[in-house]
Length: 260
Image 1 (cartoon, rainbow, N blue to C red):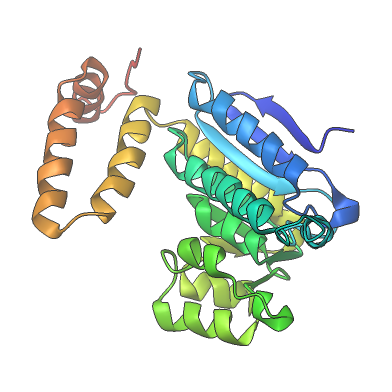
Image 2 (image 1 turned 120 degrees about the vertical axis):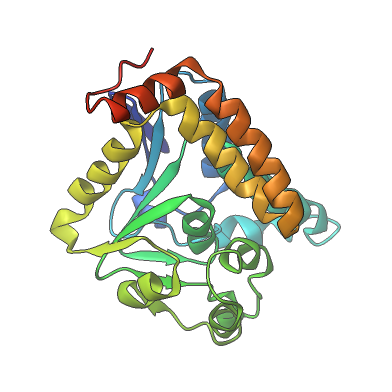
């Protein structure tokens, strides 16, 4: 049984975390499978959108605590293993952000700790109304410091700090209000609602979406003047494309664009 299943529908790649007996924990095997797909998708010219979902009753419960506990048997008490684990996890999370394709999390059940980090690392998220979101490591004495990075870049800092220090879970409506997810929908509509969003994005000029995603994250990391300088240069490049010229002409002439 594949721990990470992939199936493609048109220009949309669906990745399904497939370890339901472990609540799709980010085990060594799961992280390796995700990284392999990220590496493949980074070179994929056909895929325009990526959707990540989970099998079973939860989206993702975070790191595999059994594997982490076993690592303590090493002579260094697990220091090297833990450093390696969190480095590999960070590479997966930043890899999602750096993929040229927009990534949508399709979330149900629970997204906890590193599972919540996974949601926050995706570009967009659609969740079933019953979903709960938490960075609850503090409840077992482990502050969710690495999940905090993605979470605090998604929601207001006081909301993030309260979640981190109390271990309280947000409901899907609360997560929507805070900005962690884009939509909260009835469970029966989750797949269709996610697919609708993915298809809407996939129908756009793929090259424009890809250059726009990169610029979106780049401009967030610099000051206001530098952000305008960078995005102005990106728009100049975008404007010079043949397909952009065609898109503008089609809009002015009230016809569908003939993109190459």
